Image 1 (cartoon, helix red, strand yellow):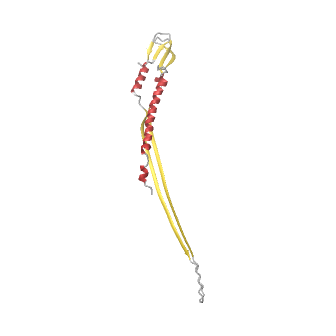
Image 2 (cartoon, rainbow, N blue to C red; image 1 turned 45 degrees about the vertical axis):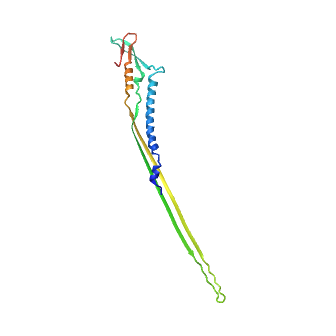
Length: 191
């Protein structure tokens, strides 16, 4: 019969449990790099300057006249920045080892004796016939069954924005600018 304690001792729990935990940490790192790449690619051009979007529209100015305006907005302030964090990770590992040993042994013994005696008294003559048979059957089987189940559950949520990124967006919001075309009037939005 298998020693189940020894079977469990041979399992590499460091990799079985550590592997999913390392995967969670690596996914966090990839998520952070993805966020940094998103900010760099969407918010700044190849020279590191802010990408702005200009909106042109017509509205009444302060004197009630129709005027054309241009609103300049940093593109990064218009998009949600992806900040995903792993909030909770749970690893459930089940090992089920079933060991069964079956032994069947049966013995059949049969003997058959045929004897015939014939004889003459004057000259003694005898004859004996005998049939003997022996049969033995033996069978043995071992059956071991191993079942391993692993369930990794990860809960992610949108994380709070880091202080540096929040500060960057505040500075960019202060760069939102509205200009009246053909006029000298300029107003800053976000202040």
